[in-house]
Length: 229
Image (cartoon, rainbow, N blue to C red; front, side, top):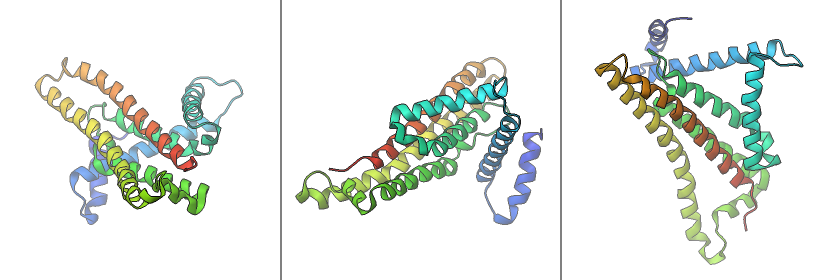
């Protein structure tokens, strides 16, 4: 595997004509690294599928099955078509969170541009699904239950929906960036023993943040599928 510092230097050279700052270049570099890792993992897993799974295939099937069961339990059977979107976001965010625990690596989710991109995908998908499922009747979701309050409720609902990508962005970014800063401080003070508990807590934080993002994405999409009254 290419050393992370060498990987960064190569990628920064490629991005120099675009005049991208160092922090954003790191986020882009490690985002592509995560994407390549997941692509290689999917190729290795699907290359030699067996009727009796073992090893890597067994592990991946447990992960995929767990996410699928969670989607069905949260959204019902009509949530299965959204499995590729939600599972991709969940696995990408989880791996992006965990990769920051490796010394010398940077978690892409500690950069607000990465978290904003994931949040915007959820936001756009939610309303595309709502419009596709309900047509123009989807506007009833913004009108409220009382007709004469509809003009007021419309602006309140619009503000509420616009706040969703903001909260998704800042929640994930704040937790991962904060943990990364704390971990760097502890590594500077005591590079051998003190950071170990923080790294263990980082594993827990990584899983929780990926789960929360996935759960909120399911809730938002489920809400767009419901009938407005």
